Each structure stands twice: as C-alpha cells, then as structure tokens.
Image (cartoon, rainbow over all chains, first blue to last red; front, side):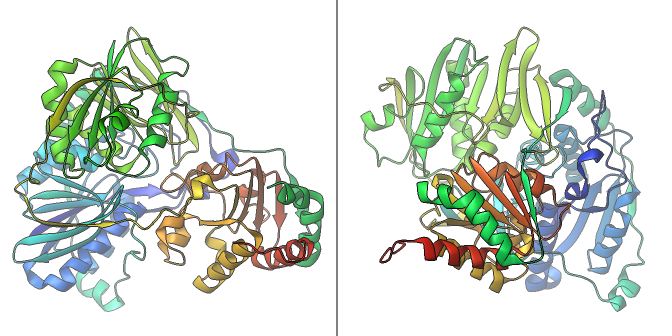
Length: 267
Length: 324
C-alpha cells in the first residue's frame, strides 16, 4: 500500500510580537525571520502514517511531499531518517499561501503521476487558515475523503479509519483510494529519529521537482475566481490593569478583592 | 438572488446553528433574495419541528440514515439546477466546513470558510474572514458563483427563527453508504462540556506544565464554580480531554467572567475567549500577549494564585453553600 503524506513548513506565528505584524499594501505578511515548524496538523498526519507503517510492516510504503522552499529541507531530512521511502519537495516560483486551490491542483497532479492508495494531510495550516486543501485534492482526484481523521490502520489492503464527526466518532473500513484529512489528534508529536537512523538513512537525497504546466493553469483559474483585496491587523488588546508582585497570596487577594469578589457574587 | 442554507438536523445543536445562520441572513449587507433551506435529517424530529428550523421561507427536507458527505454532496449537486442559487451558506461545524469546499468545487464555484461579513457587489461577493491564526482580517472578493460560504461560529449575533418554513420538497435518501465503505460504526459523542454556555470559565494554557497540574486547575475550577477549558497544546499533550478545547478548533465561549492561566495568547485560543465580558489573564511571563488582551493581567504562577483565590472565594461563601 502506497501512502503519500503532504506536509507544509510554516512559521510559528505564536512567536510574533505585536510590532512584528506589519501589514503590507499587497501580498503576504513577512514571516521569514520567524522560527519555522511543521504545520501541527501535518505533523499529526506524518506521525499517524509512521504508526500505520509500524503496525503494517513493509506492506506500507511511505512518501512525503511538500510544496515550498528549501527551508523545508531539515524537516525532510528528518523524514528520511524516520524511514520515509521517498521525500519530495516541489518548489513553485509563486507565493501560494492564499491559494489552496493551486496547492491542491499541484498535489493532485503529483498523485496522478505517482499513483497512491491514500493521501494523508493536515486539515489546515495557520497562515491562510483556509481548511480547503485536502478536500480540494479529493475532488480533483475524484476520490472519497474522510475529514478529521484521528487514527489510521491498515489490513489486507483496506484502511480502518477513525474520524471525528459532529455527533461523535466514526470508524470506517475503507477500500482505497481515499484522501484523509487529519484533525486534532492528541499525542501525535512527530517522533525523533536516533542519531544512528540519521546517519544511516537521513543522508539520502531529497527529490526536488518542478511543478508541471498545471501550476500556470491553476494560478490562472485562481486569479479568475478569487481576489485577496486586503489584510488588516485585528487588535485583541484591552485597556487592562497589570498586577505584579512576588507573593502569589498577595496577588490573589488584590485580584479577588479589587476585581473578582463582586463579579463572582453576581454570577 | 436565490440562496440556499444547508443544515443538518441529525447532528447536535441544529437550533443554535440555524439561529446563527438566521442572524447572518438578517445582518448588514445580506441582500434580499429567495432563500431555501435544504435540511438533512434522520427522522427523529417531526416535519413541523424540522420546518421550524429553517431560517428561510422555503425548505427541502431530506431524510438520510446518518450524515454521509458523499451522499449529501451528490444530492446537493442533483438539486443545484432546481435551486439555481448564487450563494450557499453552511454552519461552522465539521460537516459544513467540508461540504462548502467540496460543493463549490463540484459546482465550479468558489468557497470560503469562517466568513464574518458579506457584501454582494456587481463584481463579486466581498467577504471578510480571519487569516494568520486569527491575527489578521482578510478581505476577499469571490468572483465566480455560486459562492459556498461557511458562516463563522460566534461571528454573528444569533437571531430567533421565524415560524416554520413552507415545505417545498421532501426526499427519502436512506441509502447504503458508498461502495468504498465496507464497514461503518458510529460512537455517539459524550455529552458536550457545555463551554459555550459557561457563565464563568477557567481556562488553562501550556503553562499548566503537566497533567497533574492541569488536573489541579480543573479541581480549582470546580471549587470556584467555573467551567474548565484548555488551550490546544494542553489538549494535544492529553493533559485534558479534547472536549475541553477552547478556541477556533473548539469552544468559542462568551462567559461573563473568564480567568485564563498559563496561556501565551495565541490568536487561535484568544478567539475562543475574547468575547468574555471580563477577562483575567495570569502568566509568569510579563511579555505574554495574553496579559495585554485581558481586563486584568496578573504576572505570577497561575496555580499558586488560583489556589489562594479558591481559598478566598470559599471563605467568602455563606456556610452550607455547596457547589454542584
């Protein structure tokens, strides 16, 4: 069974301070100076795929695909060390942060030319925050899609998927192919490879590929259909009071007497 | 303009979702038009009860075995020529977020989730939604119709529904799920933690530091009479269950009083508590953005301060008062 996990390297937006949020007249906010990380939903997808491979053994072959710059390479090396069979980076000469339709077209084109039984990816990432890519990939490929996946197992050519739905949990045994969009899954931080694994497997080459003609076509469609007309910073600030001190009991007393006692009594 | 509201009566909270969508339909910028609700249900509610859920004058009722996205999408595609709609609206739940994107793709239209405002102009549908994990508002113009929009949870004031809609069509689609599904078993969700209705919320962030300290904070919440919520890192570390999650992926709360301890103030979490009438933040780091987003920011150890606060509040209670 061939599984492709799509992952994205994103800036850790929590590290941006107030004055870092400079809104440009056009285009995206510059986050190039911020530490990057694997999109947390994609990280869960990568770890779920590794757990699946742990249980299923050599029957499962794992590939990883990212669309982005060489900033992703350290993470991709880690994936090689974690025994991903193939790790691919596609680098389009276009900023696709707000274009999930284009990203989906590129992923679908790759999956068509490198046949897969299932695609796994996080449901959304923080910058564009669209939550569209896996759904659009499924539509492009004409495959069924399971959203909010929390667990994946494989047996006898079938996938057993647990997913969150609005009224609970759903366990389905599916006949591939399908797209799996991974949601909130507790305890799925990506495992860390051993130094030995890094030396043995992490030195393999990352495959670097250029997008095909579908990039220009998808961008043209995107510009025909969508326009991002502006960005504006949302201020969450309140004109608050700051209480400081070294004695927690004294802080609690001030907080309670000056600010909470009456409010709690009124609840 | 013809528009369609797509609702599920077979998932929890249909009235709340219908009221939110009704608030959006009656909000500024929403154009006059002919609205039809397509309501999927599992036969539990009666026909008058179902029609009372529709925020539009007309309704199409579709009975299904359970929510199955492929089946719902197929039916909406089938109904599209009849509905001839330029706009589809979905509630901000798991089903709505999936259906909007996939339906737009099938109908060769456009989609956007988390929409907070809408204005219909001759050159397109202008919508706003957040980006960059809720730090930024993005203004979009969708140029191709139909537009399939997910209305942001908590983004509009809910509005009571008018008396029941006119029944336009009733369909029975209790079919087997697609052939690609060989077995299917559903486990009902436990009763919701009810954080969205909390009057008093105590929420713990990553600074809680461990499962034990998180459990202690949950116990303090109980002592104070508050509901207990957590930020995403706490839930992802399995220090608390996922149904306690506050923020864009979880509960969007609006309590009279909220105390947030040990959360740095990521936008995704903040979105879940920013509607608190009075907000207290406690953090050991005086630079934590959360402190500036609160009415009162306390620089210090959350657990120590809250333990003392619980003692003070307990001492102030009349004798014999017992929290449930």
